[in-house]
Image (cartoon, rainbow, N blue to C red):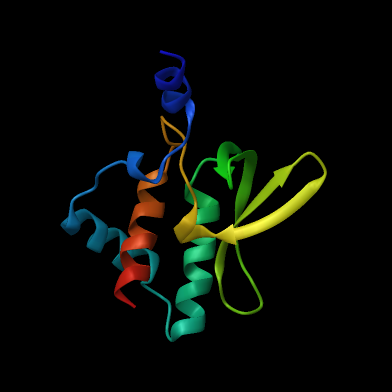
Length: 120
């Protein structure tokens, strides 16, 4: 019984909201409408995720609860989630971010980003 309670409180990669492929493709087109070249596409995704995914929210990284404060693009061009735990700060790839259950508002944009990232 305790194990099932604990499991229901853990964020999971498998609890993403399901969005059909057509909707994902439309969201990708909207996110990248004015982006030309790989660098601009990644910058566009960082902006879209930061604007449309409701933060802050809790996630888990390596079994530790963290607060996701937003999204960004690194100087190397990686789209990342900005996370903190207490005074410690770390970024992790946005595509690897575990979402809580229920996911934050705008999580479908993260699903669209993941769909795009897998196809590039």
